[in-house]
Length: 271
Image (cartoon, rainbow, N blue to C red; front, top):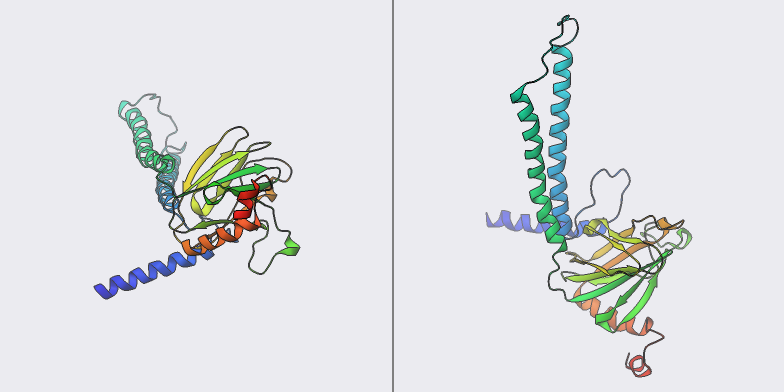
């Protein structure tokens, strides 16, 4: 039993590691992207519940329609019934939808609470939407900032997906609670990362926030999911999740590369 448990654990780790490389849309995909966070795992679980409920209702209604067409057609009943009320049937078709809504509401409210209840976070990243690119700030790591623009198809490197790759990546450490704050400078944008179960609006004059914790290092891709203008489809989001040691090394490099022009001279020299 211990050997089987060890094999199962190894397969689970390998499977999750493989998902990190697949955290992007694929051709002919009909399901949600593989979960990269606990939030997305719960979203997928809720989606599975809804799929079963929807499928059952569709099959039930189809069977009832088929039965009615066969049982109560004009040939079998040349003289139609004039009954207009059936107390038991009316109670059933009122109570059953209410029961279905309760079954859906309970896990739905639990998921919404889990997503909105901000846990204790270790760092903050601020994403600002522009027409049409994103700017990012790291206030807890030296307050540096940078812009992230779409990489043209002609400049893509092997393995980089078209319309999803940016010139600068959002870098996050794995297994770390990260607060993501969003705002915008012009119109409403939306910071969305399907594999992480994230989608939060970036509204001018307002600061929204959500949290994320990626389980595995890897590359993750998203896009602005708000109709923000003619180039709405060309402001992707690329997140590179690394180990904590790699993140610390990247921060030291980013402090010099993305030093703010308005920072005090002593602060820039210290970087």
